[in-house]
Length: 321
Ligand SMILES: [Zn+2]
Image 1 (cartoon, rainbow, N blue to C red):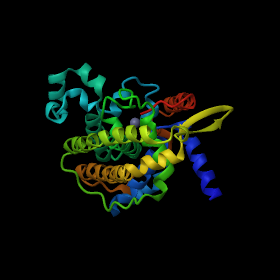
Image 2: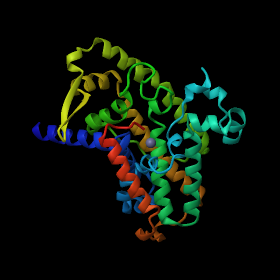
Image 3: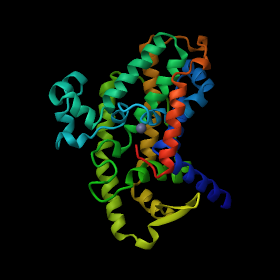
């Protein structure tokens, strides 16, 4: 019991420092996705599993050095009316024509970013470029995982429109940190995706359908839960940090009825399936012949700089992604 408490505390602190479906859940999801891969791929990915795991949050870090990165992580579906998935053209060129590039950039690029990164990964397989395979596998995994977070698919991304500020990190960070050790992550094998863009839209449409529950259940709980037990505090370098209490988190988690677990598990299978499909589309190159050269790890310096800024920002009170 004591041991468990210590671990939970350590994880909670870590999450507050590094944040988002963030650090903790992104790592876990990408790590597990490796085990969905078929025989011909799994060895290469297992050999590089520490890279895949460590770099699962790189796209979040890049936001600190590249202003064009931010909109790649979300889609404000409800900006496009009451039936957004009928209004928004699936294809990029048609969406730009209908809504303009500026509007799309302002309200998120997530489905097209998944398509784009998928194309980059397929090309990397064709080029037999192991460094790029790892980089784009990590990136693609990140965007796919983000597409499974309901608050990444709405304008009300942090409950700011409904007086629930903080709910973003609550759902995607605090709940997985507290409860994911008991989740069942058995997903079965990766499957081939016929149309990566269509699949991205399908994922986002389903994820968006969950956002009302995410928000309304918390709003209702907030009204009925004893107010003196909603929050707890912990000390971080002499500063008292407020967080949702474990008791409140547990109740919210229970009312969500397995949603976080299902979304994490779906993320794992989707990521494996996208990786597998890119490899199939590239003609199933022989991965065991690929060499991994660490020296050419892309953008090492700038990523280190981004990581420092990311940690600094997170330590000052979490941005949410
Ligand atoms: Zn993200």
